[in-house]
Length: 232
Image (cartoon, rainbow, N blue to C red; front, top):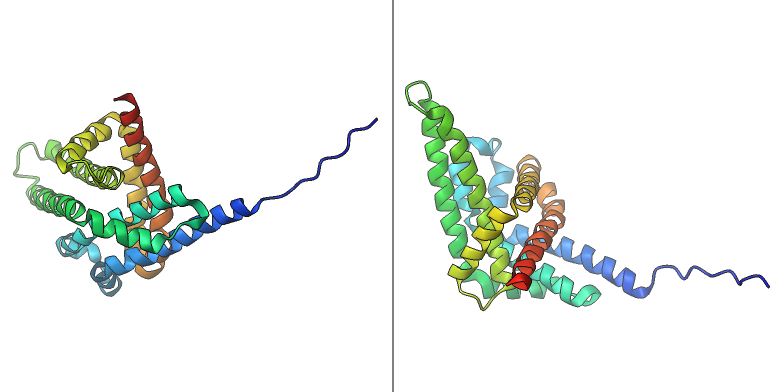
């Protein structure tokens, strides 16, 4: 007796709900990021050569840190609620709840990057007369990369562990950035893509690029924090 052929049921309602949850969260997240960083987005769209005015744009980027906390909170809600996610409410709730800690991390990161950027400009302008300039440049670049990785990882930690003290989150983030350097490198590449898209096409780049790439960054950071907590 031949076996009865099985019918393909196709994707269920939960699958479509999950896909819609991702798309909705990404679209809403990009829009909310643009609103939360409106001065930066507007300036990028008006200035033809942002690189020539990098200190000004770096100072404006101080608003990015709290908005990262907001979108990371939306991604956390997406993981918890699936297709029933309310990304706008989750973003606003995460933005408000994590604002103080994220803003402090953002101000610290921007201040350090400004300091490193000025040092790099001085060294490059005086490379012929400054001894050891060839060694100082890569050290400054590495310090800037660590600063960015540490700030973003710590912001993810603030969202994941809202009750933890900022000092403890910072220490854990420093450990994760060093131990899982490959995730930090991947983060920097993805952030570089976001920045490049925002500089080349401010409106279109910010409307499409940030959320999906930030979701990968969030997923890696979340995995790293949970792995450390499980082994603790």
